Amino acid sequence: MIQRLNIAMISIHSCPLGVLGSRDTGGMNVYVRELARELAKRGHAVDIYTMAHRPQHGPPINLGQNVRIIHLETGVDEDVPKIAIYDHIQRLACGAEDFRKYNDMPYDLIHSHYWLSGLIGKQLQTRWHIPHVVMFHTLGAIKNSIGIGENEPELRLQGEQEVIDSCHRIIASTAKEREYLIKHYGASPDKTAVIPCGVNLDLFKPVDKETARKELGLDHQKVILFVGRIDPLKGLEHLLGAMSYIEGEKPPLLMVVGGDEHSQEQVQMLQQMAKDLRIKDQVSFVGSVAQDRLPLFYSAADVCAIPSYYESFGMVALESLACGTPIVANDVGGMRHIVSQDEMGRIVGDNSPHNLASEISGLFRQLEGNGSHITTIRDSITEFSWATIADKVLQEYRCLLGA
Image (cartoon, rainbow, N blue to C red; front, side):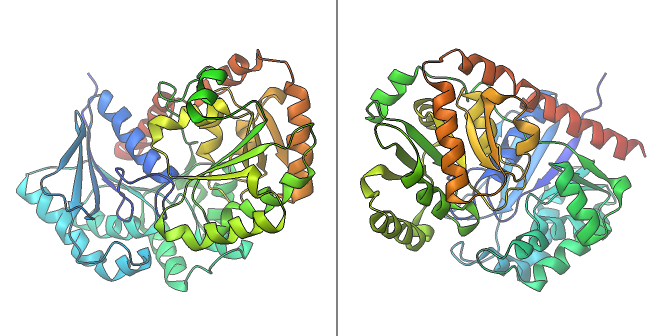
């Protein structure tokens, strides 16, 4: 009989219920939610601790059988930068302890996500005398080395170092991230495991292209899709620049899915850029889209483009491929591991407009009149199902608890 585990999962700055594509929501939210649900299917209990936000939540919210979301009060306005949470680490840790004591919940281990959550986990591992697993999702030292967007403060780098030194296990989503952890933070290779991110194959599956396009009001021109936060690190300006160089009888349409009220300034800058490049009518800024509608967009597109300067993994790539749509991506995150066949797409050496345009044009030609690639593409990423990923994470939990 499998021992039931009680797991305290911490995702403090970003609630799993948040709208994807907004400032602080994205792949990490999906990861926490899907992993928790998959662990629960195996009979384990997962409590996800996150920061209270508007509208205010009262009792724990059931995300499904054996999964609860617990919102902890800080008094911090959710619109302030997430670095402000640092001053409330002690209060949040106390809030988690109060909830645990009131419910008489004996946790077996802590799994924290991102460095702020890791600092809370660091306090709780000492109070509760249980192992602490951490996944960073992004690393401040790597973001700073790229030099795009705002520099990450020294406070973050020190916090990451504290968590790395004190935790019992680190999960990196790629071998490259594991190398970064060892090189930049001196992480112990022995306590750093590599487990990729996953994809929900029940949600992300092909929709008939004509049906999807009709529902989205699209015609028969080529469609390039971008999905993600509107952030300088995502490299969208290079994708706009590539639009003028893409070959074909009819100019393609670029659909940009993502963004919220915090990214309006960036969106306006990109809209002005599209106007200056005389491609304004070829670019559609869709805004945030509910996750259950994303398969429509992936299926309607001919190519999903990922021009990022940095990705810790790149879950959008898996979602697109699960819907049968190939990708063109910069060589970041887990792209080299994900794209194992020609039909799946192209990886560019850098995200320059000319390189992106060349690979997108080449992929358009390769796929012309070929509809059989959809099944091939989807079949190639079944190893990334959340069931498989959860089994690997559980194996790390059990090794840690056994030790």
